[in-house]
Image 1: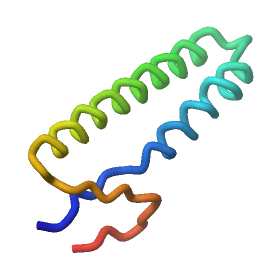
Image 2 (image 1 turned 90 degrees about the vertical axis):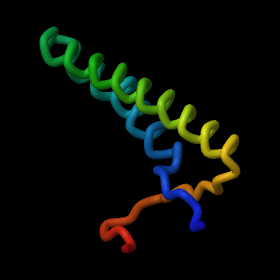
Image 3 (image 1 turned 180 degrees about the vertical axis):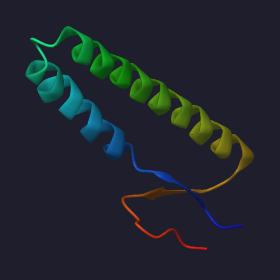
Length: 76
């Protein structure tokens, strides 16, 4: 069986860093939009947690993981 393709953790880290360090600061005088950015941060953290659960499940099942950096056109 082919390795299971999943996003590289660096994608989440880069997005979280941008949102936490720059976006929320830029929205410091816009409370509604800042709250939406905060909700997005929470959602991304949940995605990271869920991906870790998937990775652990794959490891327990003996499935290899192929971390994908970026792919505009997924392979069939």
